Image (cartoon, rainbow, N blue to C red; front, side, top):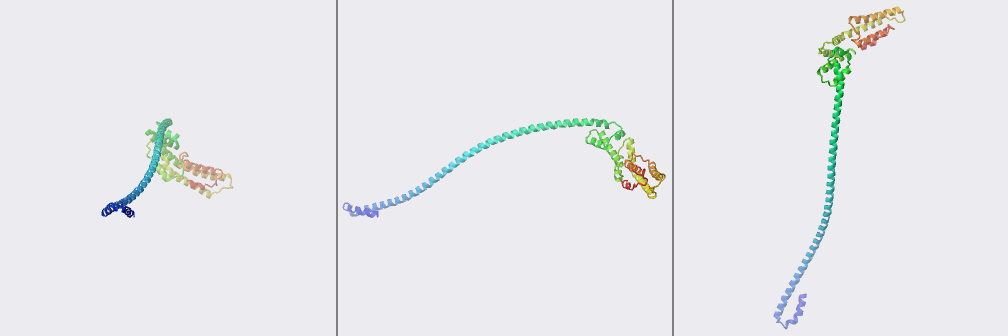
Length: 304
């Protein structure tokens, strides 16, 4: 449209220029203007695109600035945190050092306490061992056997006396005292055999040891003989009942009972101190029968 208006305005110049030259010039100018118009439109589009890109770039720059600001803020926080952690780490290291020093001090005190306790224990043990050594060393076995008990020998053995001779003496004492314990209870054939075997391994010159070995060996025979004697007395009770009779008859029955007991003690050389368990039963029979010859003693059979 602008090209045609321009041609009309310039029509008046046709008189100055030749008609042909004029149209050529106008055509060229029109083409030039049209080209410039296209270029202008294209440049305008390009400028719009550039402006759009610039806007986006500005937005990106602003976004980057915000991110940079956030990163700078994060960096400051990180630095503060690192400083705080470094400070806490220093505090922890100091605390660890103090704990280590305290532990070392405590360990030192514990070691001192243990050492002192060991020294006191050793001193106390030596104080206890001295009379034990005096009691068990270089003394006749019969004398030691007479005055010591099973509990005392066990306690002495638990003290771990280093002297081999004393330890052997204590071991022998324990075996002998187990023999005395056997005689102080109801006859046990299996246990009697074990104790007898242990006693046979002790090779010492000792009157009491020899006597103990004999008593253990004879225990079965003596026990059976005593059982037979009690059965004889029970048979007398079955045959003779003297309740309500005169004293002379009662004394006669009591004499029969005492005679059976006397025969037993004589025939088997029964010593009350050798067989304390059987001795107590025998005395129980006498105590029951003395006031009443008819007194029942059948319950004693379970004890023999």
